[in-house]
Amino acid sequence: MSRNLNKGITVKYNKMIPLSEIPLLAEGDFRNAVLELTQEGWRCNAFFSMINKGSGSRLMMILSDDHQGVSRALCLKVENNTFRSLSTEDEQFHLFEREIYEQSGIMPGGHPWLKPVRFPRGQVESMDFFRMEGPDVHQVAVGPVHAGIIEPGHFRFQCHGETVYHLETSHGFQHRGIEKAIAAGPAKNTLLKIGVTAGDSTIAHTMAYCQIFETFTETRISARAEAIRAIALELERCANHIGDLGALSGDVGYLPTASYCGRIRGEFLNMSALLCGNRFGRNLVCPGGTSMDIDDGIKTELLKRLDAGKKDFLNAAALLWDSPSVLARFDATGTVSGETANRIGMVGPAARASGCQRDIRKDHPSGYYHLSFIPVSTAERGDVNSRAYVRWLEVQESIKFIEKLLKELPEGETLKTINKSLAPDSLAISFIEGWRGEVCHAAVTESSGRFKQYKIVDPSFHNWLGLSLALRGEEISDFPVCNKSFNLSYCGFDL
Image (cartoon, rainbow, N blue to C red; front, side):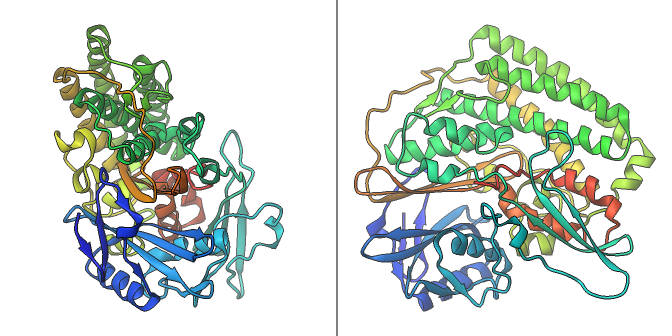
């Protein structure tokens, strides 16, 4: 841990930082430090408010340098309930600042588009939207009610004929209150709430939370527990990537791969169920390690199922890649350049499909990823084909990784009892490479050792703007396949 009064303080995933050690910067110093860091290539992971009774408000920012694998925390002392917006200088801050204003009332002065990030309860009809004007210009509104079981989200297209000039997304119809429910914890039901932050990313979010908990209690779990967590995380990645490839095939009317991948996804979900009794990994990861172990019988069965699943998946994907009609719909559709992806702070497979070498497992490894490396899978063109291709590569690498861990599973206990309280008046952070990308949890404790502030940044928070930019200049009929190529989370955003 190193201290730099001008640029915040270095923070690591397994090292808590006393709040007294984090420099409290005046606005000018804070702004200069943040903009200097971002110009050097640092990226914003989280930016949130902390309301302090009797001592005014604070804004906490976590920034990371992915090349050096270093993160820093900076704290701004807010004067007169306002600060000068950073969004006019760097686009990656715009959504964070809108959220800060929405949740705390702290005004980012000069912000170019200060509308709510999420629909306030009862105010759907009064929400402002960007509008184009002119002959033959029209808008198409989709949602928030969708067909089937899709969660609520609103898309508004500004079109000229069939060409999309602008797509605006709106969220917040569910009013879930996950972060507020976690504040003042941890409680008996905190882990359950974390597990439903985004139901298809249960392992990623519970791992992030448990690392926060273990950091505050200075708990080191066994290598065996770390390995089982990593196996579960990669199974979660495989199931969702395989499902996405099938869904992409279905969106362009190619049913063979769509049908096969639907079944194969189920097989990988069943492997998670073999680990813990739940297809989505609920209750497996817990503070102190894992609630379940892998015995020789489970290990043998998992290896058998992995081998069969890998063969089935490669055969199903080969059908997709060998179909000219599919590739014609994927190629050069919904393109996001690497420059744009970096500029707006995209993460995960969507960023890697645009050529960004960004993967938490490599850049900020935690747990078993310190001991075993997974190659980063990338593409260059940033189109639907590239986003599908990265998923295809990642499934293969994840299967290799799981097989290796199962064959080399360390000895030891899987669950360590934690009787300590959380350290008071401290900050802890955790990064996990979920299947959509970076999952960031940041927690601040109060003097009693309870959570004063708990911030969750799901990868979808970074990537919804990427989907909007991918649609610019595309036909509106390309929206389904572009949307599916990102496959972002409504519930992970509506916290």
